[in-house]
Structure formats: C-alpha cells, structure tokens
Length: 324
Ligand SMILES: [Zn+2]
Image (cartoon, rainbow, N blue to C red):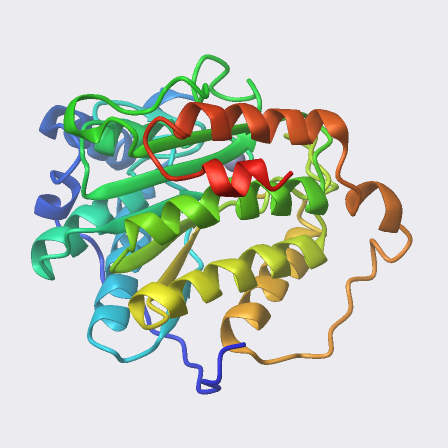
C-alpha cells in the first residue's frame, strides 16, 4: 500500500501547438480549430467538435502534460488526471470515438523528450481499443503499449492479439482482447499472467495508464462486468508495479466511462487505491453481484492463454504460463 497521504489538485496548463504536433498532423489540428471557432462538426469518426472544444481539448492534453511534470519533479508520487475529452482513439490525422487529441500519446512523447526517459509503459484499460496510442508507438521500443479491451468492440478491426508492433517495436505492443462479460477475476487473471511478467522484464521508468472506466458493469457502451472492487484492484496492481520499478511514478489519465451514476464510484475507488486513503464511501450498486464478477471463467482463461502464447516469442512468460 502507498504510504503517502498528502493530496492536492493541480490546475492543468493548456497544451501548446507544438505539444499537439508531437503526434498530430498540422492540417488535422487546423481542422479541429476551424470547427471549434465556427459552427462545429465532426473531426473524424464520432469526434464531435462544438464551439470552444479546441480550447477544452488543449486543457485535456495539457492536463496529462501537467501530470508528467508533477510526477517527474517529485511534487507528487502519482496523479489522476481527470480530463475530458478523452484521447486514446485519436489518430495522427483524425479524431475518433469522442477523442480529439491523443492526451496520453502527447504526454508520453513529452516525457520521453523532456526527461530523457527510455522506457515508458502505457497501459490502457479502457474497454475500447487504444488505436490512436497504438499507432503512435507501434514501431517504438522505448514505449511498451498494453491494451486490455473487449474483443472486437471499437474500433472493431483493431486490437487483435497478432498486432504486436513492427520494426524495432516488434513485441512492444501487447493487445489483450477479452470476451464480453469479463469481470474482476478475468481482468486480474490477465494482469497477473500477461502484464506482470512483461512489465517486470521491461522495467519502466514511468507508468501512464489510459484509465477508461467503461469496462464497468453498468456501462451502456460495452458489455464487461468490472465493479468498484475491480478498479481498486487494477489500481493497486499498477501502484505495486510503479513502486517496484519507478519509485511509484504513476499517472492515470481519464478516458471513457459512460454510466453517469456508476463511473464516479469507480474513479473514487481508483483514487483511493492510488492515495492509500479510504473515504468510507461505499459502492451502493454492486454489493449483490459477488459471484459472476469475481469468477474466472474457462473462456477468459483461454483468451489470456492465447496472448501469453503470442508474446512468449518476445518476453519470458513461459514460467508464468506453465504454472497453470
Ligand atoms: Zn472507451
């Protein structure tokens, strides 16, 4: 458990144009600004821009950058960047899935350059595939990208197990598609069998998480069964990895999550795990959901096994895998 108990809220600085250009094409940035300055529209595929969205998106990307500075300068050990719009679907030249600028890709590139980091882990537990972030680092061996997502949800043709990176980045993209209905136990099985051995071998200097709370039980845009307990477990797990490898340096950036009633409880559980502070607020929704969400089902084990097999070409996973 983390021992630090001081917490505070840091206002985000807006990202600069140069920050956006770390990942996005200038013509795409111009398009978002043009839409935002006038009557709005779609900056790609389901990436709606309203009047003033550009400035808000700058604050969202800037929030992720502010988080990097806060952690790297030891102002805090870890940060939850509560920002919207989200970023992980945004590709270099188009917005997608409510995402305008890729906050995590921009902040990761910023961290690499400003702090000369050679090994950054980006883990994406949003229920949708982090296609934009994958694109940013697909041929990069200094950024390990791991995405856990509902199999063939959105984008439906992305996030396959066989998509493992290219060139010197081969093996540094790890896609973990999980079957619809996966709950706390199935996710934790994937964390323990796949994420843990790979991250221990990679030894990151900094961990950034795309924290989408849309694998939650009640999400209208997905079909997973994670509860507050599960999100607490995910966060505790990532905290332990951060403490083991990088002095606890952990940044979570808010991505999706569309149950307005339930997501606040999920995000609170995450912040409790990161801070070590218990607020005493109980999840009022899931006390009766014990069995299905906390059971590991054979088809979930099988899905995890397929990823282990694929990545045993790149990482030392045999021992973990053979313990079954
Ligand atoms: Zn999502």
